[in-house]
Length: 139
Image 1 (cartoon, rainbow, N blue to C red):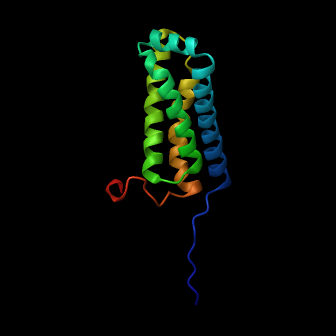
Image 2: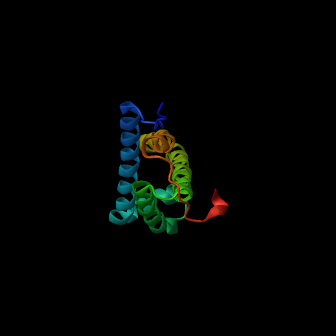
Image 3: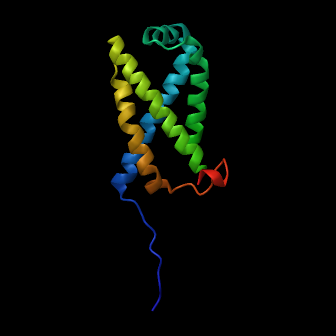
């Protein structure tokens, strides 16, 4: 009698849902980071209108680029968790800002929906990253 270890293989719909939600996240991050540079004055105006300081525009753009790299590489568990959490908070602030300002908020709402979907399905589809960037204290 042979003992076989059965490895979990995610259903094709799970994979599709993960990659579609992750693709939407990557698109939103790329679009935001690019627009913060290309139309900086317009984006800074939105930040002012939403009540956020304009000095956050460029750092937020660079953090979004770093977040893209973290999500795509899927290498460090703790860093990936922090990137998803930070982007979720960023989207929550954007959603509130757009709603209060009376601006279109569809992209922020979509982001709020797909971030947890991508995060939760990421471990099933790609496996949980085994390494932590910050060492054992983040296990």
